[in-house]
Length: 260
Image (cartoon, rainbow, N blue to C red; front, side):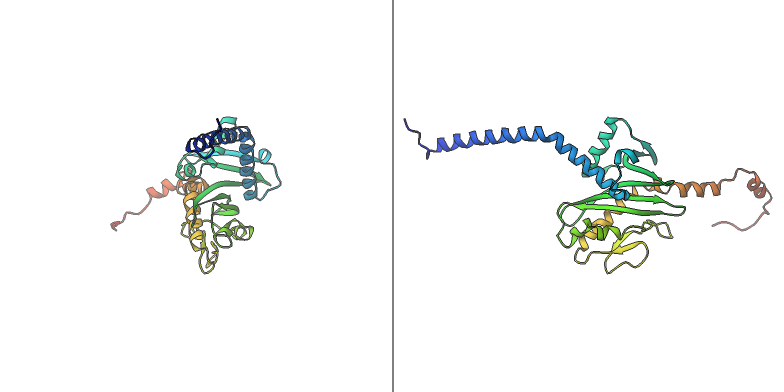
């Protein structure tokens, strides 16, 4: 008996068979290629971190110390399982944005100078924006030495410009905090107005606002560590161990002025 290829039964059976075959083939390809895909993602993460450090030609595994920031302390990460967890977290932008402890951090020392790279994540106009920022601690501030940013779907020629070297280079050398100690780095609409700001992208205001929010929210999680040297210096100034301070306090003349 000839098969009626125009019947509903034939069409349904044919569709089910084809979907099953194609689905099985795609599942096989996804499974067999997963190792290569994971390796490509890992290589892209390492490359972006090295670009932020300004050492794109150097080997990540040879010059970078991976770590996690917990309770304001840098804790090196060495074993394979912990390293895998760090990179897995970098790939999960939602989890990274919500994390408040055990934060990924990368350290590189060169010519006696230590630099740190932090992951940054946020929202642009149309979707996720993310990247890595390299910072160097100075005696009285924290300075940006490099930044790499990318996006999921910002407008080409406008917000998408955050992924270009031209925009990213404007952040280099900017100090994070102003004289009052407040976070001051931002993309400023109408052009930079002080030494902490960079020019915003014309027509890309919403994306620039997203970058500003991303930088402040991401970096604030590391603030106690980044400003640790300054905090310790202030503490040392306030705390006297030589005995002279207590002796001077003992000889202070009594006063009738009441403190408000």
